[in-house]
Length: 190
Image 1 (cartoon, rainbow, N blue to C red):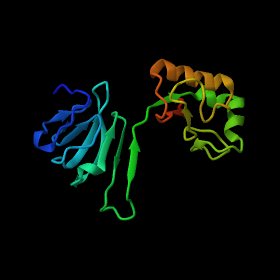
Image 2: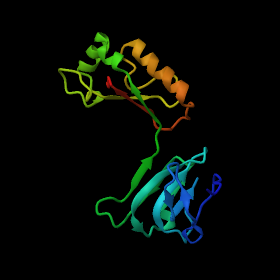
Image 3: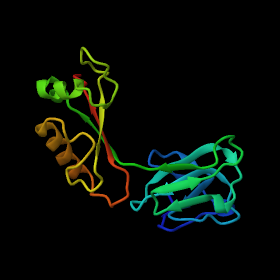
Image 4: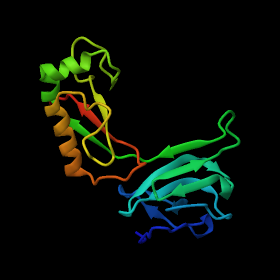
């Protein structure tokens, strides 16, 4: 596999086969840390290289000519692309985000957590009230700085503190302006 550098932009004419972390190859990889993209680039699969050298999918569409002024990649985290041929969509913005999946059936067994889950305040969940089962997943958002703030910090303190501690254990604190960390809480007992 070719060694990838940050700030490397690969025009299609220079594209070589790049393998992702699963060994799948991509012959048309547009690799960039920040834009704009050079004029001789056509987008087939756009991939963003992180500081760790990992490839992450950006756009996975049919081959589309994109004007260089319409595609920007900022700091390896965000890209914006305008596709004039998509009716009604003048601009599309996508961001990579960090996340964890925590299997925490003991949360769902906790009566205080159940009360919080059933409360009227909206939650990002598949749970629809009543019996809690394996489809009762909940997604909470933790501040990217991992300082303990987040969308659902009003849940039982023991649960929230566990979530934040696991984020700190597995992730590096982010910078201001980055998306919140998405933490999916599952209730699988197998």
